[in-house]
Length: 192
Image (cartoon, rainbow, N blue to C red; front, side, top):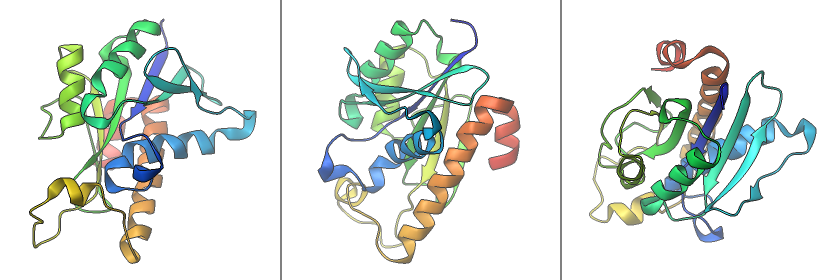
């Protein structure tokens, strides 16, 4: 389909992970959907391994999605989406957390490596390319680097860091909308 875009937030399904650092991608697409709720649209389960909604108030058709698979194996869900909607990797934006970006920062790129992020690596492996846009939401890494990184990314924010995190989710939501309306290069110039 020409003029179609897809924004996929990566995260882990289930209440246990709902507000964890690792679910930044899910929280960004939830914020996108909430901002677009004028038409009462909600995520709906599809036959594939994902939930999808249409972002309203856009000139182009924009799908937003959340894989129902866990983060580290979410690439197949992304592949299922691009096959179902007949779009190319150049028409997608993947939103993920990034432990190496400071809390409150976001960064958007047109391509690149996984940077050690297993969700991005799964997408690269399943699509057979790293040529897709990705928006990273900084979740920070404490100065006293925890030995259990998995435990850290699966923990929730507390106190003032939660406020900073929510502000970065809103900024990432705005960057996604700018990507839809203005394209990747303008968004990179504005948010990086």
